[in-house]
Image 1 (cartoon, one colour):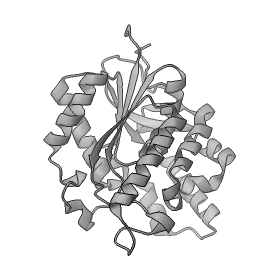
Image 2 (cartoon, rainbow, N blue to C red):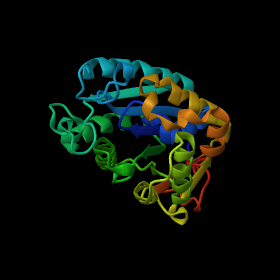
Image 3 (tube, rainbow, N blue to C red):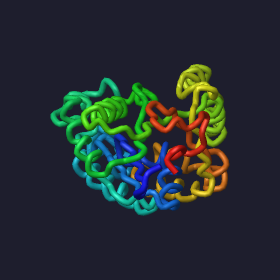
Image 4 (cartoon, rainbow, N blue to C red):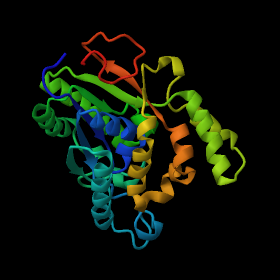
Length: 275
């Protein structure tokens, strides 16, 4: 047990990532008096521009997109009651294989040691008890998510700190249901190839170590996603409406990868063993 306020640090790649996989835990633990710290690694400049203009299309200005997305990120943090937002400021690398992967300042092309050293400074400043980031494949292979995992794990080695460390994930059973709902709201017939791809995301239910009930905070999570209005075309969950969203997104799941508390598994609290 610790004799100081507990701290949760979430390390994410882009503006809006904080809401999708961890909006519920950030809101829940803030409400419980835990200090919450969000580290966002990139500027989100490869997101949609005004009117949904895509990267590489006429009128897409990465700098303007990044400025807009920073405002949205700050609004999201207010919704989730995040105490501290830290921006590493790397350029968004885009999807795997995009030219943006190799652009100057892109997160994907940044030496891991450099990013880890900067994150290590934040670890030393905030002394988190729990750190959350993505798995080694960035959940679905996004280069910036993979890089966030790499610098987080390297930064922990640099500092020698021993917080509980979690990687975000999703149960395979939920991914199957998610695919069905996507087609329900989209009015399209299921695509076998798409279903097969979804079936490979996440983990079998029995491999998930931590299931956190965030149902009471689903409204905040929904509003956090809605704060990223410029990316609304890409945020499928907003089409559900709050009630359906709460039913389907009320539990957030993780794999515990580092721990010194010996809290028994499976667990329902990222801070099990610490309070």
